[in-house]
Amino acid sequence: MTEKNEAFFEIQNLTVEYHSGNAIIHAVNDVSLSLSQGETLGLVGETGAGKTTIARAILRILPEHSVESVSGKVMFEGKDILEMNARDLHDLRGRDISMIFQDPMTALNPVKTVISQIAEGYKLHHGCPQAEANERAIKMLEMVGIGANRAYEYPHQFSGGMKQRVVIALALACSPKLLLADEPTTALDVTIQAQVLDLIKDLRDELGTAMILITHDLGVVADICDKVAVIYAGRIIESGTKEDVFDHPAHPYTQGLFAALPDLEKEVERLSPIEGLPPDPSVIRKGCDFMERCPHRCDRCTSFDNNMVELSTGHFSRCYRTGNEEA
Image (cartoon, rainbow, N blue to C red; front, top):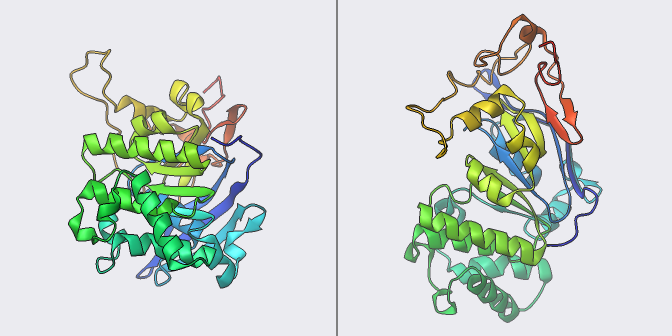
């Protein structure tokens, strides 16, 4: 892995709103995070928390027909992606920042061979002859464990795990500086999950690529990530190094996530799920977003200003009880 430098990627106060009928959906609320070269950040949270919206906002591929507004800054090597013109975006996508989409069935074009899909982006960004692009595509397929003899086949001729490998090869063809991996193993069985995760780690280390990994699986985060950001109701409610969050979870929601995991060293009859449902994203709330589900809620929660509290260097939690000995 390349040496970690000062943050070359940073999100500042990102807010994304959708419209649905007459309602405004507050999908992402004032999210800020940073990433250094070669570093991996895990975005963890329930379905609908805003994780995929953050990734799509980074590449500016949000659905235009439903987006109400996008504000904040997405800084990449000193440039704000949200302010880039179409030409700069065209050069950025695929070459500097690439994405592994959640569903390989919809990420691949069913009427094009896999070699043509991988070679297309490489040829476009490097302006090279088709033969060189095809050679690069075959090399990437071999790197993800697919033989050259299958390069001219179509997506429907591959299994789900093989399609996901093709999507990874497609995303890494131009050796991007930042990889966005949106639940890359969700649709795979456990054995194939392990193979794909090992593959992503090996390629990340070989290419020196920074990565934002979106996942529900805390085991995957423990295995791959350097830093963790826990998302709830469109906000980061706890963030820090992997060791900070796993060894010293501070926010009640983070504690609830870990309490819901089975522990082979403890004998319990039932796990401890987090009761209730996430709040309605169309409603602007006062106080703590998690208070309706929190076992520690009190009157103070209704007036909480939702600011992050720093527990230790780089470890933050969005709860008034954090660091408050009296609470």
